[in-house]
Each structure stands twice: as C-alpha cells, then as structure tokens.
Amino acid sequence: MFDERELQSVWYGGRAPSLWLRALSLLFGTLRGLRQRLYATGLLPRVRLPVPVVVVGNITVGGTGKTPLTIALVEALRERGFKPGVVSRGYGGSARAAMGVDAHSDPAMVGDEARLIFDATHAPLAVGRDRVATAQLLLSSGEADVIVADDGLQHYRLHRDVEICVIDGERRFGNERLLPAGPLREPMARLQTVDFRVCNGGVAQVGEVPMTLVGDIALSMTGAQQRPLREFAGHRVHVVAGIGNPSRFFAKLRDAGIDILEHAFSDHHAYAASDLAFGDELPVLMTEKDAVKCAAFARPNWWSVLVRAQLPPHFFDAVAQQLRVGDKTR
Image 1 (cartoon, rainbow, N blue to C red):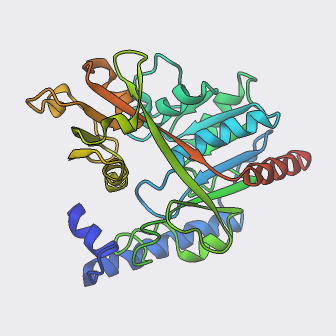
Image 2 (cartoon, rainbow, N blue to C red; image 1 turned 90 degrees about the vertical axis):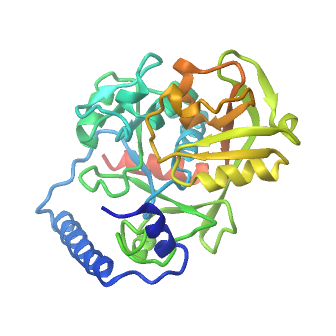
C-alpha cells in the first residue's frame, strides 16, 4: 500500500507527510486511544499470570535491538536466581496457535527471532499470536517462574509487572508522528509510563539506560569455526541483512574496515538459496537472525556475525528487584 522508501524519507528524512498520511495517522491515533481506554477502564479485561511478567518492546516500527536485549535479560535473570521463559509473537513464522520452540523448530514456522532467542539461551520458549495463551502454554511445563515477553509492549491484554522500551539511539523517533505519517506505534507520552527506557547506540539521554551491541566474532555456518571479525578487514565480502534497520549492521562492518557489498532484504525475509547466489566465491557475512533461516543451504564461506548486548549491571538488578516486588503482590 505504501512505498517503504518513501515512508522512510518521511519518517526520518525530513520530508513532509501527505494529507492522506496525516489523515490515516489521525484515524490510527483515535483507534489506538480508544483501545487503550477500554483496557484502562476494565471494559477489555487484562489477564494476570501466576508469575511476574516483563515486557520488552518499543514504540516505533522496525528494529531497535529488542532481541539482543531479550537474550541478555534472560541470561541476567538466571544469574539472579530466576527461571525465565520467553513468549514471542513469532513474527515471520506461519504459526498461529500457541506452540513451543526447540532446537528442531523451523524458523519458517516459529519465526526467526524466536528461534534465535532459543538457540542463544535454550530457555523455555513459546510463540503464538495470543500472548496470554502462549504464556499459559509455557507455564504449563512448570519450567519458568518469570515470563519475558518479546515485543509485547502494545499487547495490553497481558498484565505486566515491568515494561522496558528499547529506543534506536541513532534514529530516535523520527518525525515523532503516529503511523503511517511517522514511525510511532504509540504517542511519545507513552515513554513516561514505562519502567525503563533503554537506548541502543547513539547517546543515551537523561533517564535512559545505555545499551551497546558488541559483534566482534564471526561463526562459520557450516561448522564450529570462529574468526575474529577483524580478520575480514581489508577484504571484500557480501553482507546480508534482513532486519528492521540493515544500515546499522552495514555501518558496523564498514567501520571495522571491511569492504562490503550490501544486500538488504525486508525484515523477516524468507530466504531461498537463489537470494544468495552472487556468482562469485567471496565470503558472505550475515546477522544471526538471517543465519537461522539460511542454515539449511549454507556454504563453507558463509559466516554469522555474533552480537551480544552490553548494559550496566545495575539495570538488571533493578529489573530483578521489581519482579520480586511484583511476585509478592500475587
């Protein structure tokens, strides 16, 4: 319906939105506000689970770093004595009903991000369009005492004890307009109601927790071999990214001194081997999110760039403390 490049130029490039976009934005805001009021007044009920829930999300469309933060949060909560389980919408996958995720799950079914989170954490994980039903399925195994909801900030039906909003520190909020005239899923005022605001990259503003994505290791997609990313410096490589903000990934590799040939795909792109048939034997670097979908037809010179999120320990301490408080109120 809308050309993605044109929208990006409106959202982040300073181009004025058309009257049609502004009208749709007004409609979107009206419907969103009505839905929020229905939940606030109890006319639409919220479901409170028997364990505390922490939601990781954002108020903009596109990638902000939610998945690396979710992985880091799961690991940090384990270190603090919790048994976290993860629920996800399963974007990019075909699954509709709630289902569990394991090492044999097809990313085409459960979604690339869900499979990536499982591979990185091996935490109990389930996907489904209904977050409540998905969380209940996960809890039925008895393996989790806290739920981490990946990308669930706008899923108001699920009661949450902690809300974490991830912010793209470079693009921030663009023109600060609601969809489709801008990139916002919710108004800027929503930031004042969340418990933590995490700034991924850029310069964290007052009240924001800084987060840095560190990716200095490449893992062979056909074996266990690892190479420092710096070994690719000065060499020409193909770089594949089907994520919300491919330019961030491209810039990181370019800053590492790598001569890159960019291949940007849409977020959650379903890859076929022909997509990566570049007609030469140059190495191919890609994000972990892309790698889980390309593993079945990977070649020896294809590499996945491993990324981990770094945040101050006091942030995880504060989240854990708030979850303990929420658990005591049950």
